[in-house]
Length: 583
Image (cartoon, rainbow, N blue to C red; front, side):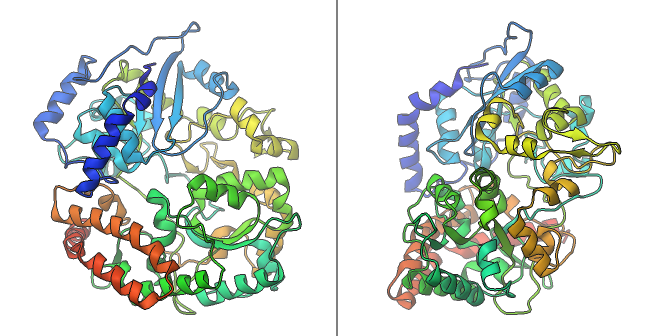
């Protein structure tokens, strides 16, 4: 395992200089230049075959004393490292011959962290660069997968041939796979893992479970509840509504207008499918209405005064107290952490669990907050770097992780320790086992999910069990806290997707458009505009919300936004939409 992680610190000054330079041209948060040429990719493939990687330092993935190969992995997302002697990681290592040391993002954006690694010239074996994958591709440090996939049937079967082809870069090669959003067999979805306006179950119960469809109704309930409950019983100050604006997570503030108008999460644009036309959700009447509502609520004292400056960790800490009544966010961005905290503290039994609401601009509108089909995001994923000295072993490990035996270890744990099997072959957990699985110390010492490696939703190959416990029907209902059960009963639903009530329809062939915009670069006018648009929104949207004169600040924001030439971006997105639609 290479000691590449140490170079994140020593290369910090170099990266700081790079970031400053990029900020001057609006590239600080985006990938670098456009894709490498076919000739460069061929050079990279040749380097891969003999184990060399240009300037990148290569060091053998030496077996440990027990013969297990040790690989490294960097993940450009915040996360928690597990113990070196983690029990399930060791079991997986005994079965696969491989152990991976995961390192997570701390104190940087994904672009900054990947830039630092590139500046240091020393790479981990596996890498997930988030929205900065193009930087890795442009620097010729990723292994093409084309010559390997057919050797590893579990891995190859993760996608259809047509889906794998969608990951091909402009040089014709595949360099990574997205590890999420893939359903095997029958879907067993019980959770809403997408975006929503969230509200605590106890707030809904307090108002006898009202029908909430619009922003006005949502904030009216928050205001009334807060007026009677300004603090928790322990004296903690209640925050009626907060938002996250840090780095790429500012989607929690900026992208609600597309959903409020009833559209799905294309991320960067609205697609008017009736006319096959790209629409800018930043300038719609609904966008102005939404931000004016936030401005009104901020000036009433309903919105967290720290929303514009709080970090992700501070945001999670606030939610963990049970004192935040509501927010707009993606479920995966907060709930995996918060639900375990609530279980440990007992706040789930007090009604602090969050319920998703699919709000719209007007009552009675059809909405698409929940995505029922799998979402194929080709813009990022796990890759193998050219510094990996045993590429076949790395691919074999990815293949092994796709096997049912290893998936069960990752997500269910050890039979008889973390779960039981009944007479019908169905997996279940006892209360004690559930409590342990939620415990932070137990997670560090025992649980190893390799959470940014390939994984499935849906049904196990045994045809009975869910691949993940939270999708096992019996487990889902047995683990619901009583206030959530009462909420579901009141609204006549049995799952979170039913609760949010989005229209059931298949994904369009172009969905999601963010899989294209996430990889735009400053090599095109549209890419330049996209960078500038993001910078302007980061700067101006908090000002719009906090302004004492909404109209004038909104107009200033629109002037700054239009100066970015957003039409250049929209034109390139239109061309991509038509390509995906087969026009």
